[in-house]
Image 1 (cartoon, helix red, strand yellow):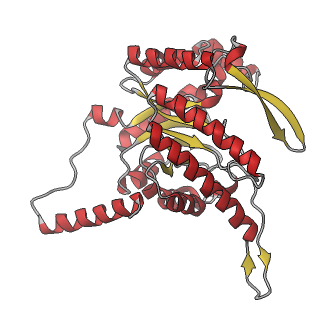
Image 2 (cartoon, rainbow, N blue to C red):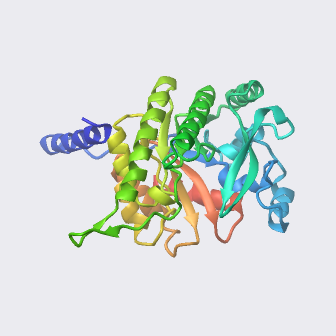
Image 3 (tube, one colour):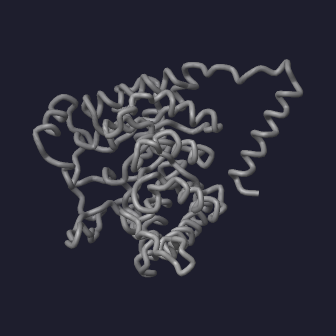
Length: 354
């Protein structure tokens, strides 16, 4: 029986038990501390104030944020979390902000395809000797501040569902190195993007007059096999691999469910994002589809791309109704505030909804 089916069975059994035991009331309200334990700070919304090799768009807006909040590194983020989000101790860390940007020895050159062109970027290598030392230093910072790494939002592993077997193999190896690094930080889970085309190939009309998407099935098959390998490695180091509703395969929540079901491991699950959808009808329906497949971390997001993003409480309720007991990471994307202000807005909204 899969982890998802087990939980569904237990939930059904639990409801039956409630019917037989009228004295047993609804779950008690969470204490303030318990609510705060369900929230995670997030580096992504405030990436503009980080010292980084990419700069994340050097412009007047980012400069204004640095003047307002100061410039930090990942080693500063545990204390930043405590200062900006009182009572929060869990963190969601973006892979692109790892490492000491002044030390070339902990970075590797990576070719990135942008449209028809290829450019080279540099990314943190958690398997390098200097990278390992940096991870140890980050772990010490967390211990000193009483903070924890709940989740790593990772863009480094690529080509996980690609048609080219060598590219897939290379992407899996990068993911394994990061899973080893995640163990040093005590992370519970790590997102890996599916890769492949950002817009999926269209079905073709078969001879029987029905659409058939064999090309899509090939990408799914490759992704399933890759996640099996990563989940197997994750089980050895105690870190789950997750799929987030992004682009390509994972834009469709049913594809994520298929992958998780086919992998069939407690070390492979979903990490839904409240707003990363292709159209507004997925805002809540897509989240409902993914909620039973998530256990460790979700992105509580505000994004003015959609008209109803202010209804954070509705999304939190969907997750709680599905039995989710993980953390809600504060991932403000865009809107009327800067990244810190937007994250603080989410902090209040999630707290109120828990």
